[in-house]
Amino acid sequence: MNLPVLKRDVPQREQPGRASGTLAKKLLRKRVLLPAAACVLAGAFALRLAGGGQPASAAGLTYTTAPVERRDITAQITGSGTLEAANSYSVTSLAEGSILTADFEEGDQVEEGTVLYTIDTSDLSGSLEQARISLEQAQRSYNSRVKDLEKLSVTAPKTGRVLSLEVEEGDDVSAGQTVATLRNSDVMTLTVPFLADEAAGFSVGQRAAVTLESTFETLEGTVSKVDRADTVLEGNRIVRYVTVEVANPGALSVSQTGSATIDGCASAGSAAFAYAAEQAITAEVSGQVAAIRAREGDRVDRGDVLLTLTSDSLDDSLQSAADSLRNAELSLESRQDQLNNYTITSPIRGTVIDKNYKAGETSEAGKVLCSIYDLSYLTMTLSVDELDISDIAVGQRVEITADAVEGKTYTGVVTKVSVAGTSSGGTTTYPVTVRIDETEGLLPGMNVDAAITLQSASGVLAIPSGALNRGNTVLVTADSPSAANGTAIEGGDYCSVPVEIGASDSSYIEIISGLQEGDTVAYIPTTSSGGFGMMMPGGMGGVAFEGGAMPGGGMANITVSGGPGGGSPGGRRGGS
Image (cartoon, rainbow, N blue to C red; front, side, top):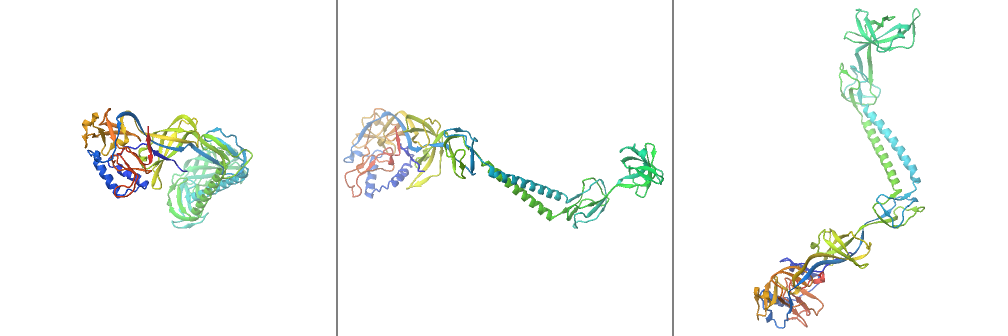
């Protein structure tokens, strides 16, 4: 897009030492070549006119006079551009299919997230269900591998003491191989017969008295099991076996025997004691013994780790299962994302500008279904010359006018000053973004004019721009009140007076001090008969060469106009 160049209509007051460089750049752009003889002669006149020079001695020079009077001065940078919406979006479809709903029309206001289109998802439903099934299978496989990995830690199934360890660190073991034996010798059990009628009245947890047959010592026990089936012994005695647990005081062993009495009923026989628990512990998975955590004779509780194994194959299978699970998750997510593509919502809050597809039609991937503009405010982009960009800042007010809306001025504000310039033909310009909130009557695409006010002064003393000479001096007539503060030049008709300047536009410069109402300034106005003009660096008190060759030969029809206010090449600034 070609951006309009924002032109500066009023010369900015130059800082000392800056004017010559800025003007030189402007001259180079215009490809103006000044012959050496002209430079010498122009320089001579500049020296004579600066601060106490003698312009009267230059034959043929004619001064123009103007009164020092009060004026309103406004310095502006102006340009034009095309209005754009605050935001715009072309709604496209990533899915192809029959459009089921499209419940909106052109001109409708929609909110962000409003459903615009729904597309038939029949083709996607099957693959989505298959992706869910694959994920469930992958999850089960992964969980199984995790459990296998947990089996690398061999734990005690019950409380007891380690009777023996069958492996050492570094040994390879196979699934089902015995790696240790665990015995609970703290508790002994005695299983003896009772008459069936008596045993039928016993219950687990009931207290029992156990008598050792070798020493007739009585120990206290607890019923832990009562058989529900009858057993016939010799002599046709019908009995039921009852198991009693007895705390081992330390001397009981499986070689000792005893009998029991429960609720006053004596057992029908005796039996040998047994350990409450003695169990061979086997490895559930194959691996290599990495560490042994318990020694023979150690007392361990249920769940304590006896030894740990390592298995590269299990690690690999777990990683493989994890990868499969992640792939299944991604596959399902992809299918779900595709499903989301079948419901198309508004990405912004705005106005529907056009609607290209209706319900019943078939959507095509990548095609624009509709367009939405955010018209809550409008923007325009101006391209500002490099010599003016330093005068533009975010927050500056901008006056906007449009030919399409006569008699109305809108207010905008600078929201962005880009530092990314574009160079063309030796000139660099920078894009400046302007926002317009009051938009009644304006539409995107309209061409508008913009003006940024840089300086403004009302009812101030002012002189024509061409009357300001180098060093901020002004020639006044000898009868001017301020002539008393100046330096008379040859002939005594004029005085050079130093002044302090303020705001300026293309025609006038504000005088802050040095002059007063009633003064009359004298200057040589800018003239040109050769089609172009040029201002000398630093200002030159109004010297003109016309009507033929310059002294010593060279280019004719060159106009040199006076002072920093004597005109700005290109006419980029302006004012009122």
